[in-house]
Amino acid sequence: MKDYPKTEKYDAGWIEQNWMGPNPLCLLEDLCEHMDLCPGMKVLDMGCGKGITSIFLAKEYGVTVFANDLWISATENMRRFDEAGVADRVFPIHAEAHALPYANDFFDAAIAIDSYHYFGTSESYFVDVFSKLVKLNGQLGIVVPGLRREFENGYPDTLENQWFPELFTFHSSAWWRKLWEKTGLCKIISCYNIDNSRAMWQRWADWSLENFAKEFGVGDNGDDGSIDAKLLEADTDNDLTMVALVARKHLPLHNAVL
Image 1 (tube, rainbow, N blue to C red):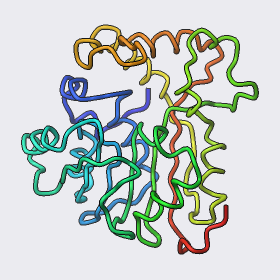
Image 2: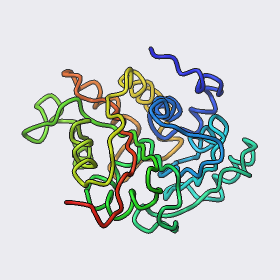
Image 3: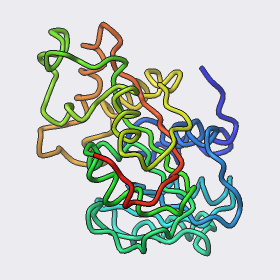
Image 4: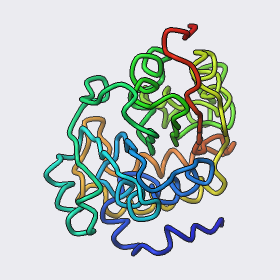
């Protein structure tokens, strides 16, 4: 499995206590290898969950982070930032993805780890919201659960019994590249499937089977922590992966083409 030296500095138990999906620090470290983050930059951590990616960004890259999430309260995250010693560099924000409180062109970079697929699968979101957040030549980076190939007929027979509507937000790296590229607002720097993401996903699934219900309760869709495990087991064609996408904003918004 690929080494993640920055992530390995963090206690595995602490990561598991605060993760909400496949190891977000590994995913973020992989993404940041394709980005240029420098001390003093202002970075949006969109859909930060319990904020461990925000802590990681502040500690490892010296950036100032706005830790934005809808599901986890700003007060709860603030306690974690205090405990981690980064409260002077990480600011918790509670806001929905379509009602963000930030000025246009405010950030040097906007990042979303395992969250963008919940709100960003349309060109209009990229044009009207996400790209507006960063300065000209600013960086945009996401990691999302996805597919190694687009499914032409909904989903394959192997996944029929484990598929549910939310999974239609899963797409291939080529699909994500086209979604952003065709707007004319950015230059794609990197778009790829993360190596060993299947192993990361499996580790999260194994943990979820044992811990999900007591940590998060049973979801509205009946998720008791077994959904990911069953989905991965059914994926005999190895279609599931984690997709990473990095781009730079390079045109004013009024030049966007849809």
